[in-house]
Length: 82
Image 1 (spheres, one colour):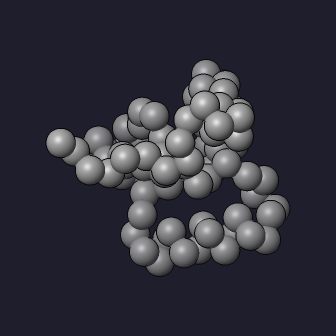
Image 2 (cartoon, one colour; image 1 turned 135 degrees about the vertical axis):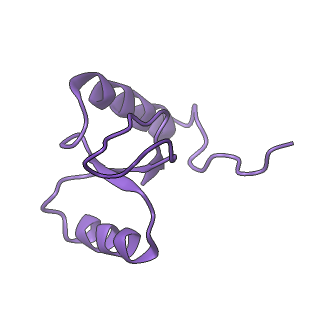
């Protein structure tokens, strides 16, 4: 899972302005289903990409995944705000 760059509020999901996590995987992947269940259990806001995103969000997330894979972006963001 990667943190979303920007979330779009969706009243059906109750996302609001929370920062959500993107689960970039096939919905049939057994590992992704386990991660989804753990996120639900922990109460983490998340969504499946690219199935739950718009086309523009899908391209943005795909480019982010490629940049992480190529080593141009860190895998985990800095969670410490100075």
